[in-house]
Amino acid sequence: MAETRSQSFENHGQYRPEYHIVVFFILLANFLWAGYQLFQGLTGGAVVAFLMSVALIVMFFSVRVQILTVQDRVIRLEMRQRFRSVLAADLANRASSLPLRQIIALRFASDEELPSLVSEVVSGQVTAPKEIKQKVRDWQADHLRA
Image (cartoon, rainbow, N blue to C red; front, side, top):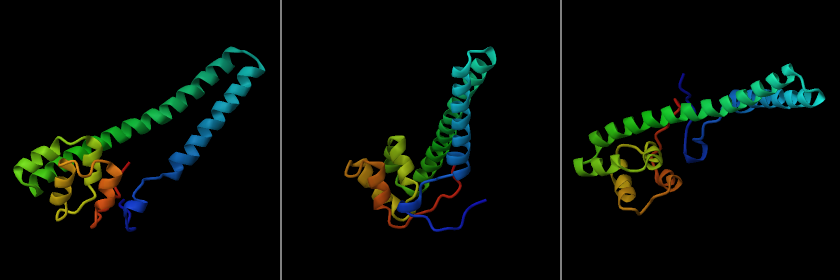
């Protein structure tokens, strides 16, 4: 369900305590315990438990990267459609070929300010995603993110 709190450059980062804290520290505790057990006595069970703990930590980070990759692809698709509907054809084509990080930063701009902001980005006046987000005046919140 979408959140209703106001969103801005200062608070737009997504932070999920149940994932970023709870799950991570449980996996970390499991890893440390499995490592401790392995050094207490080299047994088949201790080796398998340690390997499983390593696999779970790798999976923790891998799943996050995969989720964010899919989210970035969806944002790129949405923004390319938005460019076509809001911008002049030549500017939309140039905007669609911008690096993904810049396209993602532009998604927070309103339709009214998007043409001027895209022009600045395409011309190279503004290049860093953080700078692009800071130039957004009418912030369009995105609460449905991974």
